[in-house]
Length: 123
Image (tube, rainbow, N blue to C red; front, side, top):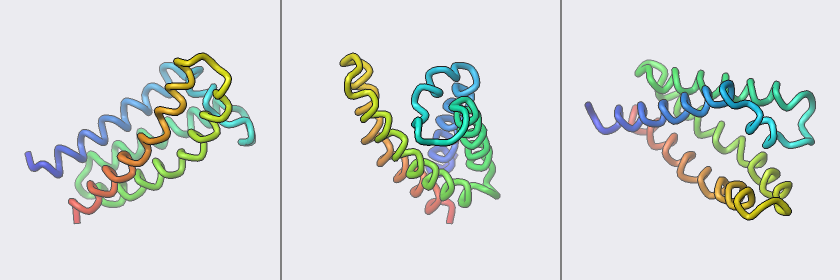
């Protein structure tokens, strides 16, 4: 299996796992939804889970991989403001919660770059 295909499938697996987790353990995701977003946090949790599952499916299929990789990069960039808000909201929580919140921030950069590289490799 070519390295580019393996990378795309690994990214698809990561997104699929995250998407499933949004439905299996939604409360932990509900807690990270910024209060400034309209509506119910559970709706946002479900919507982001569906988006991650759709992106994973797109990455798994060669015909849609390039477009899905680009959409995945945008998705990872798009959730960054929510992660910043979460880190701010959790600034007075336990050290463990703070570590989780702050640790998520730099992780978005390699995820965006990984998705972009999958999209370029499929060109």
